[in-house]
Amino acid sequence: MSTEKALREYLKKTGKYEEIDEALIGQFTTFEKFIKAAEDELLADGIIDDENGRAHPAVNVHIKYLDKMRDFMVALGLTRRERNKIKEDSDIYRDDFDNDE
Image (tube, rainbow, N blue to C red; front, top):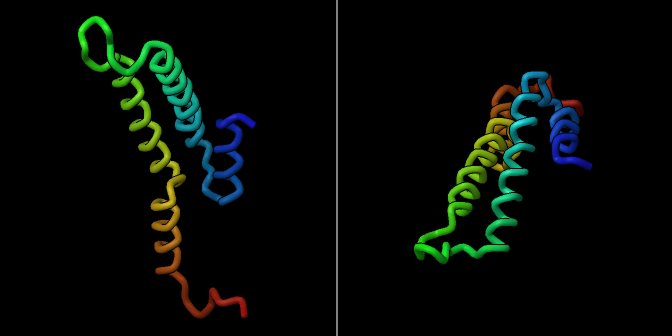
């Protein structure tokens, strides 16, 4: 299953999916491709650029898109911290009428 499809299904299953999320989901998978390309380049060439002894340029690409991916995960409520925050927010509004017993 593709990441895009998995994200969409997860959001729908948890009742958090909105049509506007499609833009973030599409970008998320693009970031995933950039991260993979940077990883492949680093595995092939190494982390240190032989010409100048500094970090390979792909290191910065990798870091940048991992950060962007993390930001999107937060925006979509996919991190454990965000899921817990959503749960806490919903618990605030619970009262005796929410009890199904």
